[in-house]
Length: 248
Ligand code: NAP
Image (cartoon, rainbow, N blue to C red; front, top):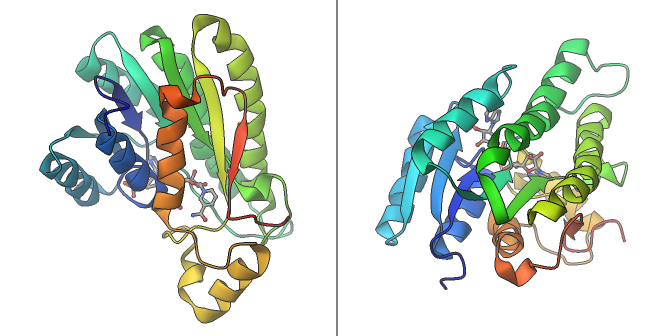
């Protein structure tokens, strides 16, 4: 239970959903966790409270990652707290919007790429000075990057970009002892995929999957914590499908 003892971690979008589950899993492994949020101050504080009640170390930290300098602002705040060393970066914060090709607006497209791609790119860039030998970066991809599910062409392309970044980041940072991977969830019961909370939505999700239950955020968070740990020391440059066998 102490695989991550002594390590420091930043999880973006940790106020809810998959980010929250990842923060809790990392904290249970022994890491000190910076619980990032944007609008969910109360929720982030609850996550911090839960970690502290388990005997862990955590702190809430805010930044709007849709802003051009959001990643830069957040990175400076992180460095002010952790000092010279961050061991784990989970760039999880993301937004989604279902829209057909015809209905996608330029504003929606730009916002999706700002939060889902630009922010992770510049978080990695800005945190590189403190991401040292042995650190692990985990990005959030999606089933939508490899399969035409839902009506999500713009959102899905942000996740395709994440898969590409994983390849290039891993190649560039491997020689510095930094591993870079992504997890690609299928449909997970969070606010983003709240259609799973209706009978019809649940049927759609189960219809795609080999395993017939709706995924919970912990199903993803536990894999994030594994990828962050030294048990995954030989895994880099990979996007790991964590989707109950979706679209096999
Ligand atoms: P969620 O429940 O909607 O939570 C989204 C998180 O992102 C929240 O903590 C939110 O912070 C943060 N966020 C949103 N906009 C932000 C902004 N402008 N600046 C900073 N933070 C922002 O989403 P989720 O389902 O857990 O998804 C997490 C990640 O998994 C995303 O990258 C998503 O694309 C990916 N994913 C999800 C699914 C799924 O079915 N749920 C499937 C595949 C991939 P606040 O609430 O504090 O504002």
